[in-house]
Length: 188
Image (cartoon, rainbow, N blue to C red):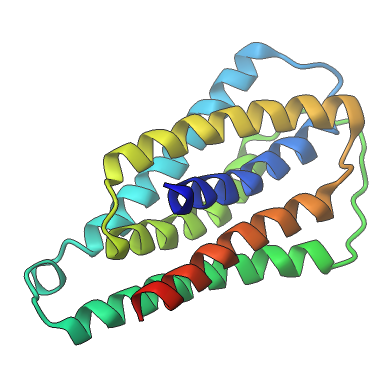
């Protein structure tokens, strides 16, 4: 259960940061636009999670009783979580300036940012499938957590700007790295 929580919260950190960045640049929070953004995020996070998981349901993986194949799948899952974590840790330690200026919410910009995170969610779906957790529960939790993360991110960005950005990336990266290491240690 802790493993699942760390995965979901770690992935939601990226969405929070997208919301925080966008929230730091708006004049006021418009709830209709927020609803559209939540819908975009929910779709772009749930579909890659399900598709990634479906790849692990290919009969070759699902019907195999080979211990070596199962160990390989756990190894891949651990590496995928470590890959996502390394990106987040890179962003945490990178000294990138963000220019906060007022502008309208750009749906295209948000979609492009969420697509990048969706790649990580796709990889997490593959990892999730290899470790054998219930994907429908995971997808529901990912949808709920990303909606909360984007709303909270917009609110924090609107009120405070992009503070704590590096720390949030670092925390999310550490969470996902710990899952990857735990999978490698436990199953390999």
